[in-house]
Image 1: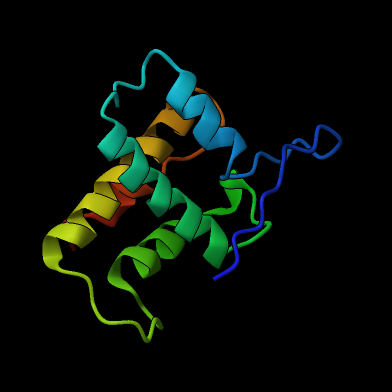
Image 2: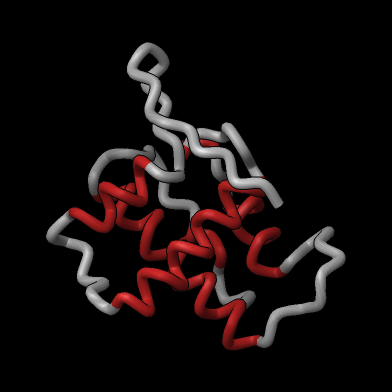
Length: 117
């Protein structure tokens, strides 16, 4: 999978998931992720999601996009262990919740996930 890096386009106001939003998330004092191991793993999660949706702005992600990612819908790769899927869900919930609280997205997709995972 190729990871394409896109930067914020002030003309359109679209905020990309990776790397701008993730960089801001890491830098924000509200982000309490200090462990290099956690940052590495969560960063992988964000890069992989962005790689599956290149060019999609942060606000363009829906609950369905995130559920499809974590449940590996339409992904022929071997299934993740349940705890791996749970950790990916936590990483995405944290990032999108922060993006909602800071006004980067109008709605927070993860609360609509319910108890499926």
